[in-house]
Amino acid sequence: QVQVVESGGGLVQPGGSLRLSCAASGFTFSRYYMSWYRQAPGKERELVARISTGNSTNYADSVKGRFTISRDNAKNTVFLQMNSLKPEDTARYYCNAKLLGIGLDYWGQGTQVTVSS
Image (tube, rainbow, N blue to C red; front, side, top):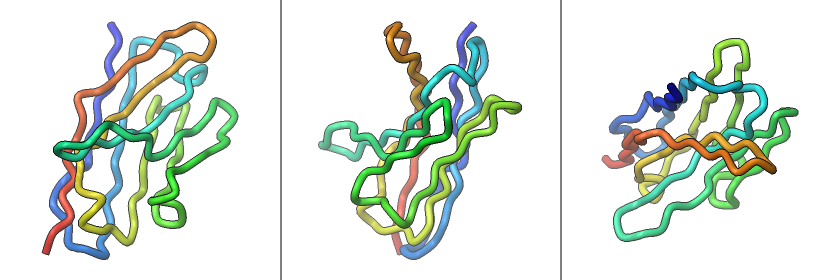
């Protein structure tokens, strides 16, 4: 049974930091591209960061230099370190696992991040 479970969200003041985690099971984690998306109320879901099977990364322009994605294949976990948080980072953050070329695509339920003073 496939499971993708996010954790680590919460309320943080502007300028603060959070570390999101995404624990995966039920599939061969190391073969999957892992991504973090976010969706704010009234907005479309957007890609925040992605890490490939070879640890190449890419980021949305809005988070470059502030967020870092990483993965631990031994623990089937992907992380998103978020620093210098801004109110506009407030959103529900979702973890995605994608097996390229096959069309397999798994999502978690999300974790809420709220940046407010």
